[in-house]
Length: 256
Image (cartoon, rainbow, N blue to C red):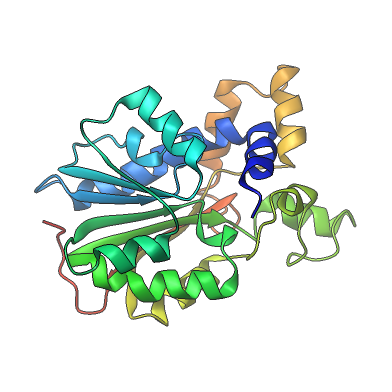
C-alpha cells in the first residue's frame, strides 16, 4: 500500500473528525465498566490521525501502539511524548510474531482497522490475537456498517447498486472488507471468540461529504450531532459503525 497516498486521502475525508469523537466516546464507555477493577495493559492496532487509546476515559497500566505508517507514530510522539508508551513500526502480524511469548494484553483494540485489511490479513490477525491476550482479556473492534442508514437510503434511491457495493469514499481509501454486526460476530466466532457486546452507533444520514456540508452551512449543529448519536439506539442495526466486544471462549468476566 502507498501509505503517503493513503495519508493524503484519509486526512482529506470530510466529517471523519466528527465521527471519530463519537467513536472514541462509544469505545471508552463500553470498556470502562469491564476494566474498572484494575488498569489494563492496552494494545492499540492502528494509530491514524490520533490513537483511540489516547482518549480513553480510564487509566491504563501500559500502552502499546502498532502502526505500519511512520508518520502516524511520529505524530503521536510529537503530541504525547515517549515516556508512557511502546511504539512498534510495522504490521500487526510482525508485532505478534515478536511479542507472543513475552507479553500479554488485557485489551486489544482494532478501531478502524479490520476493514482495511484484505481477507487473508484479517483472518491472520484474529487467529494470532489469542497468543497475546491475557486470561479474561478483551478484544474490541470498530468497523463501518454495511447496513448504515445512509447506505440503505442510497440503495433505495438508486444512488448505490447494493449494500455490498463500495462507496466512492471507500474506494478512495482502498477499503478491503465490508461488515455488518452478524459478519463481525461470525469472524470472531470462527477464531474462538464469544461476543460480549455487538452494536452500531451514530445515525449518519448521508455521505461524509454531505454531512460535512451540512455542518459548514449550520444546518447540522453540535446539538444535531448529539441527536443523531442518540437516535441510533432507535435503529440499532443501522448506525454508521459496528462496535464488537469479544472474549475468548471460556474467558473470565473481568480483565484484571
